[in-house]
Amino acid sequence: MERNQQKIKMRVFFWIGVALVGLASTTYLVQYRQIFQKRAAGTRASLTFPSSMPEQKTGNTFEIPILLNTDGASLSGIDIVVTFPQSVISLESIKPAAAQSTSLKLFMPVDASNNFDLASVKKKAQQTGRIEFGIMAFDPQKNMILPAYAGVLGVSNPLVTLVFKANNPTSQGVVSLVNNKTTQGDCNLLEVNSGADILNSTNQLNVKVTAISAKDTPGGSKLPPKTGRVTD
Image (tube, rainbow, N blue to C red; front, top):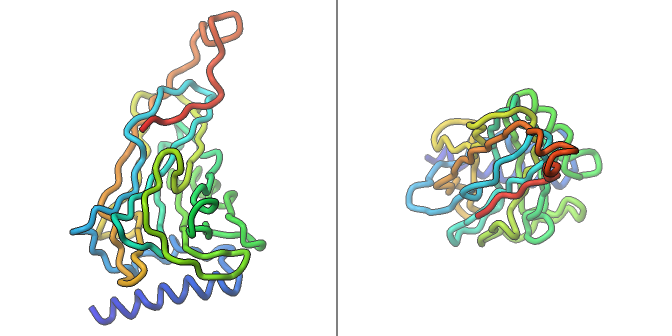
């Protein structure tokens, strides 16, 4: 236990050090995860998708927000790990919504200018079907640690929004927030005082993609919409 606590402290100081010296172009939270002590039991902290979303037509772009409930705890950092069927949908963009409205301003990895390196996340996502990035209560432009975040981020003001494109028809395109609890490579919510991962629950969302029919093409009844939004 003592050794685990020492590793946890080292992890926190590593975060701070990376952010302060402006490295992290290839070094970020999810590459060095899983030093955190797991103690999700007893909390209700969650990372979730909304419960459902509309059916998508091939060629559509659509958004899936990630929602956060800290269950009253204060978070200094977050791991996001999402799996998706890359043969069916592709990751187009990531909107770091919390950076505009909370102290969770540092989205990692970052580029040489300390901006979120979306390109590297997208490249890996399309190769592996896994979206991996970290979030921290830190201002990368001012090199300043910010207060830990506690609260609820819902559909109208999410933690982050994933933007996908529907490419191939399927009735079972499952997008999942990974929560293995005891193994490597999953989501984490790092509580600031204990250094523990307090994540209790995540969920998955089924994305149904259908082919464009004659009525959806020019000369038919209508064109497919450009975007689709999930519903809570």
